[in-house]
Length: 290
Length: 130
Image 1 (cartoon, one colour):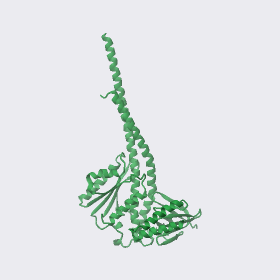
Image 2 (cartoon, each protein chain N blue to C red):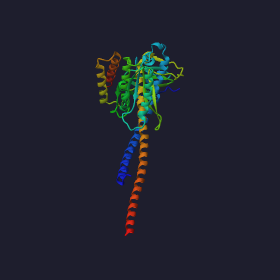
Image 3 (cartoon, each protein chain N blue to C red):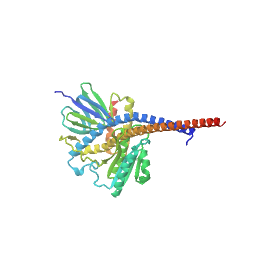
Image 4 (cartoon, rainbow over the protein chains, first blue to last red):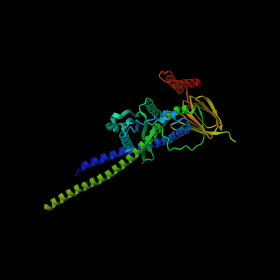
């Protein structure tokens, strides 16, 4: 059995850990509110963008000559996967959930004999993936310097993806991120952004638009922007999810630490009492023997 | 019947402006300035760098934009843009910064004609603001 001193030390250390996790939880809660707000504020933009593109792609008469970003290259040989994770740890299953989802997708692609290329956004994803898929990772981006997700960063990633697409480096692009549902639930998502997947989304507005200049030109201008927008949306969702996940993880950790302190305190008191009893017995039996 | 319609400007971070007493909006569309009044036909177009003028009962407003898409439908005008500034908030130093950026971009040699044209536009518009 641990000595009284050891127990005391352990209680102190668990208590200080608890203080840290509690502080982290508070910080995450404050950040979560902000991240959630900006995720919600960012939604109209991506929704509107989606709508416009939907209207446009329905209006396109010549499907054969539609921009490649919309219709694809006609083949599906090389897949590019953009895995978006956080730069910081201690956020529960946040990163591993994305990685798990991504890995199962990777395995499927490799099984089908297709080529796989990976871009990781955020250092945690890179850490977890480089051991198994190190040779497949072509780029690793991290936004450690920027405090909040901003459009400028997303645009950079988007432009890079488009550049690679135009250079013919890949045919299909999928992004992986965590969709924020609520503080406890985040759903890992795989979203295909090139070619744009509009199937299943019926456009029921019969409205016909006038286009100026023509559809093709607007589309070719709009689609690259849409890529950046989608990435930005993913970044916003991700940052809200990260904070939510961290908050619940730290909440759990704080609670566990509390339980541990209780248990250790009981043990400490018991052994203290045992020591006292032992001493008493020794004194009494010593006195009796006299 | 009122001659007003609704305008909504959204940028990626948030809904930038919502106004529903607007009588006319002039946007710098790609093929020239375009004035939009109520009951305009549904239209989608995109913007080049320029000034958006919003005329309404509660006063006129001017915004500087660098790019964007406009969609007009059922008397709802949506403007999606990534860079927008209210002209009254845009002070001289900020203007100079933007101008410098735009000039740098315009002087690059390795860009294609369209981005060159857009950068030149930016420079022009920013110069007229001073």
